[in-house]
Length: 123
Image (tube, rainbow, N blue to C red; front, side, top):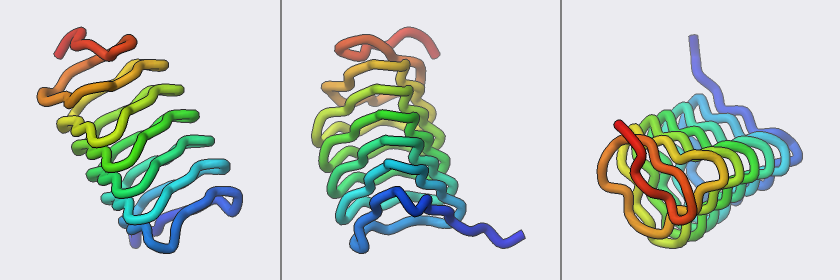
């Protein structure tokens, strides 16, 4: 089957953003300029992805999540509902960020993180 990307009519996606195959951008989500989404990325309801972010293949951004500018998220990572990530943070592959967490520094290894600030919990 041929993969397509679906962008809800009430989402805002910059014409300068790059959207890979199989992505879904839900209602109320915002994807700003010079952001790059890999393949099969989900940007859920009301999430905000600021400028110059890079989301690798298979990333899921849950509802109400906020990524500041120049954030990088590795493959198959999941950022929980209502979480925030400050600018210029890099998140490794296969990372799960718990609901409502605040990421203030790079996450360099796979695993589960939560809290404010987000801290490693388990692999």
